[in-house]
Length: 220
Image 1 (cartoon, rainbow, N blue to C red):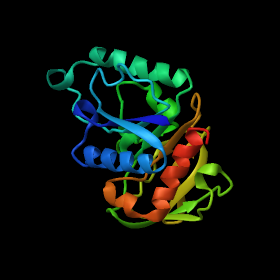
Image 2 (tube, rainbow, N blue to C red; image 1 turned 90 degrees about the horizontal axis):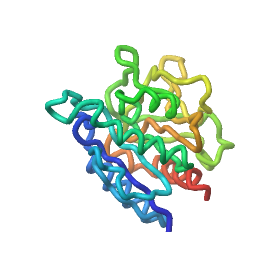
Image 3 (cartoon, one colour; image 1 turned 90 degrees about the vertical axis):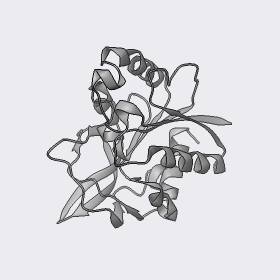
Image 4 (tube, rainbow, N blue to C red; image 1 turned 120 degrees about the horizontal axis):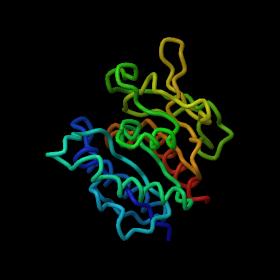
């Protein structure tokens, strides 16, 4: 059985807008239905100790980085080095929603993910019923989907690398905003901007997208 490590935001990587514990629990249930065992760990400095995952899922964002709260940037270097080592060894990564705003103390994260939330530029309309358009239906991640509908946020004007392979877009005022893409990597890396809270995963098409992502990342 494949094993996924779900990194749920905690401390400096947990924001007040996302219930990462609830989302991580829902993800673990979906993974189990697809024959993937899951370990959920909060983003603590030792979160990557003694793990050997086949997939890393990042459901973390941006929290408080002040040293008195959660350590200094130097204290977190081993965590980021361990994550980079996993990726370098070929472990695939799925970054979800607020992951575009995570790990700001490690600029290489945005490069690997293929984009980031740009403060003052990126934004989203109010959460609500949203339709996301599949740009490339030929890719295994979007197989069988023409649109994805969910109660969710539409991230707009993300800072996106020109090297990504865009799979899904959010259309707003005549502009297509990339929200799901295959990133440069190294290795297999997917960013998926959907998934503000568990209600997103009540949508069959959103669940299918997530399952397709996991299956492709695991090489199934």
